[in-house]
Image (cartoon, rainbow, N blue to C red; front, side, top):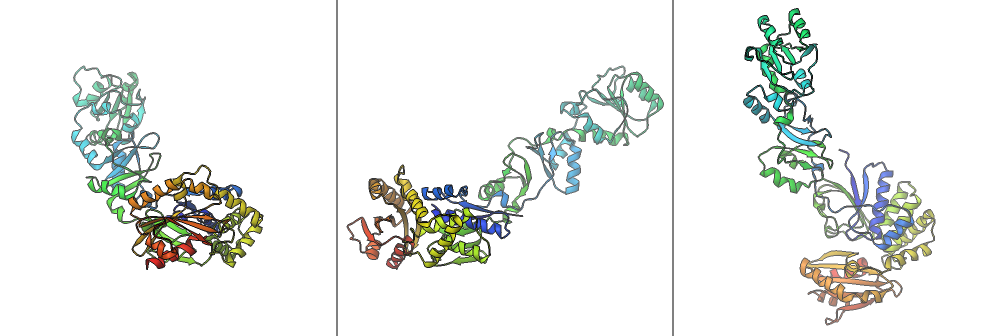
Length: 541
């Protein structure tokens, strides 16, 4: 199965997460991987939007989880039966495939019902009188095909059988039949005359032989004559197999699954059902296959590549059920566990895009203007125009190379990018806090740290009461010991650290904040990763 490989960054994605995912997915395609798709785990911020618009790149697909779905199961493909096809068709399929159930579809090839071997058996038991064929809207062509009949003369006047089916022995003397009626007879010549003169629209002759006299009589009364190769007894036996599948199929309270249904949702339904096999359909209702309980243990896990993070709390729902192929990151090694070996590349650089830019050159691939522009945007964003203490000489070197390929001036473009991202116009308190919020575990402490880069301190502090309410609610509902907000001013070159939660002593220990205060200004602190997280870890230990 040629599965899609999803490349994505962390929750509440920043410019590095989005741009690195796009650039790395593109690199993988250049290296020959066909089904690689960039994705995102959250809303795109203003800064990233500016970069995408500037370099005319579409935002990646939003992905909210990688839980196994029906499409990830190794269910088997199946033949389908059209609802007007005769029962005999289904029976032949069952014998050939050794399967006891088939989906039935309508004119648009959408699931219409299910037919099983039990349904066929019930039909044989309940087939009682000559009206069954008529009552179930059976096509005349079905009858002809099932009996392997050959039209010797004339044509039946209707597309569907409009009358009843009789045998020559059930005809009452001088009884007049309708043109829609059909009579089955053998080669007993004394009965042939009565059959022809009955008024029926069609005479079926079993045994494969038709006398000249019978043929002439049929022409005289304009009666269709059909020859079948089977014995009289077998012909009678085969009649009910011409009834359309729609007559016997189950069509109410069907249990079926769609390709995008989640495995954990269907598991309970399957286990509580008395049925063993279930149809699988696509979003249009077209049948894709059959699934049974045994397929639940054979899952093709979704394949993913993580960029700009390697921590479960910062990643997608269901990650533990996915197959992680690679991790490209510039953060500390955290707590993601894998089921098999993988390619892991982590370097102490200011930005993940710096690593990816190096990988382009290592593979002798020159990124396009747009890909170079996105990687440059990520570096300028993550290093705060090279002012962040996380910035390295390698970040600067790659940025210069990328700027030439992107045909932009680093300083001019960089300031425009950062300015677009720091605007707080129209943002709510919730957006300010959650746009770049990450979760961390420091020993026994669960901590949420959000960072906003801005030159508009006043705009933030006008909303500070609402922001603190959100932070308090986060601690209460999700049981965080601390919720922090870094308001970083790239002009002043420092961060106001706002603190909420029952474990403020961590911040007191790490940064010397007065225990009675709720915030502290940290001059020269610009990096959450390098200047805040390590000190909190030390304090927790």
